[in-house]
Image (cartoon, rainbow over all chains, first blue to last red; front, side, top):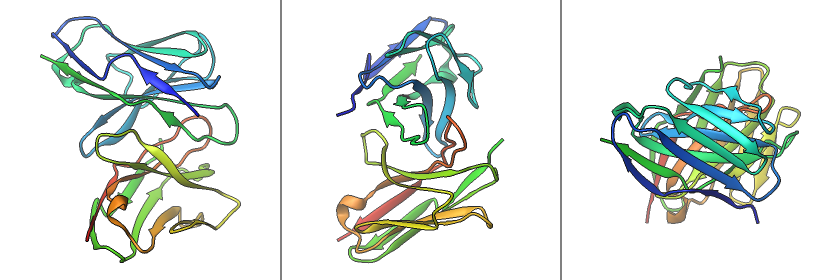
Length: 113
Length: 110
């Protein structure tokens, strides 16, 4: 059974703080993804990674960075949190190859005040 | 980049009715066409997918049909039940990344 876990379900941070969101998967997936989900906007891809130390920008990378030092772990970093980054953040993982099914974590609800 | 649109954005049906959600996309290179279901407060989960060499796929009460020429694919749910109430996302892809639509909220009333 695939397990994708995220470090926090709820997080409250102040404007200007550095924020780390962590995602861990236990299925030896090569691909990992970070999305943000806002009402009426669906899931928008922030960054993804297809291998350790590799990263690719998604549709909305501004204000975010990522780190993948180990295959099972993918971190999303908000260098200086702003109120417009208040959102639900979802991590996902998948195998490299034809299948493409993405397995999602439970999400982190981040509030920036 | 890929432009993905879903219609309708909300859909209300009576239990037992059928529901159809349509997804249009712009990237002719897309070759993978999944539908995800997200129940309230839960994570999105894949419910059915299709590849570009297949026109239709069924799994019990759900089916997906693909019209690659017209660049759209649809989710069909028959004999709807209250537990089908959720947000449904299409997410066409060509390669590693999927592009998610904005979602369709389906409400099934008993």
